[in-house]
Image (tube, rainbow, N blue to C red):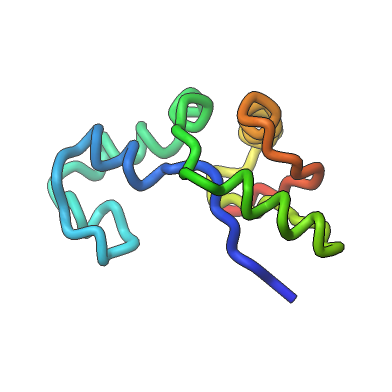
Length: 106
């Protein structure tokens, strides 16, 4: 069984960086169509992910899943690399989100 328990607020970070937009579109390129290169740099920069804010109550929700016997896995859509995996692990530890297994997918 899968549950979506998002911890990092990438969406707000993108809006802070690029400005107001229609958040109903998942695609950053559709939100800000004339900023492809700047978006690519933002998405591929590992530092972007290190400083993301935590979504309120994410830690609580994940802990509840653990208490119910689930073993949450963080599956994150970032450019896959060891560095992105490591930054995700560091981010989780800094925010005290008890997820041990991290999968980075493109």
